Length: 435
Image (cartoon, rainbow, N blue to C red; front, side, top):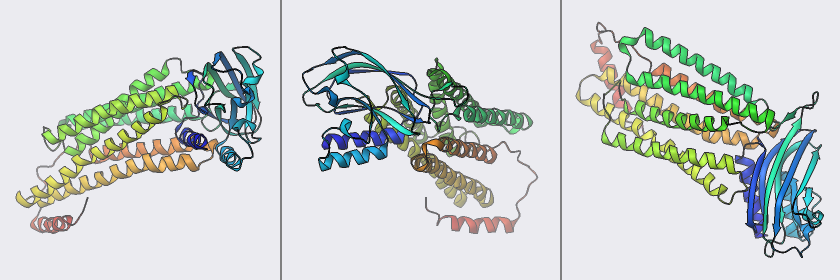
């Protein structure tokens, strides 16, 4: 029962975190004695297909009941019932359950070291392709596995290698890339019109928007090629490059805005530089982990470890970028008590307070709410979590650009005594605000 519980954990992770793309994947299994090896996850329609080609099969002991070794498809719900059957002693191997769909068992090999099979799936649902070895303590398996899962278009019969809930993602990513390119054009216009009051941070904001647009365009092409051919044809490499640049540039921008660099002060303090020195290497680690997670799949021995590394690093980065904003708020409070410019400092303090709250909301929504949406939404509508995350990111970019856009300061603007006194009173109340 311990091995079954371990698989449940792996299957849960695969179900919650794996993307339902099902590229044509080749996996190498070497001297593996795990009782359960989860492969890819896919959402089938009523015209689903699984092509499975396994070669170079080598068994450490072929004198066992090989009907208890093989591949099957199962949903997460069905596996929960299989676990109950195993616990109650109704079955001794997952392949014996009538709740899983056996694809191929090794007793059909008849001395061969390879096989090819085509499995037709007519029950629409989200399935996990799994390899079971119910003789794990006596048998080690070596093999090369090539799997391809796809749906046939109802009218034309064209193969679609994207899961039933992800088939519209290429269009979604392309439309969002157009939105960001439009934002970049608008931002260029703003910088040109207000070039006399433009700081270096504003040009960096333009670079962040362009990188985001290119990242979405590459992801659209990546998903489009996978949808049509089952392979990214090199677009995955370009996508990973721009994902790396997007992650580093966005976190760096949040840190720089939080410090007030360029528009409040021309330099960074040592502690602010240390935050950047923490965030940038962590983003490198996060992107390496993401590539390994995407390319290896849940069958890899270290897949779960890399997933945990990615989640941990992401949380640390999200927390680290908040510190500069907190420091800026405290510095503005202290300045308000000493320089006699209460009204100006109140405006700056209010701006940074709003930005602090928005950053927290953005992090919470994209890391928690989107994850919750993925888990509760039917696989047919898995694209909705992508749209929600991209809309939240777009709103964050627009808010940041609007609040920190170049502004022309009017030298003739005079703050009267009443406004200054009101601002001073408001600043006293600000001291009660707890971060």
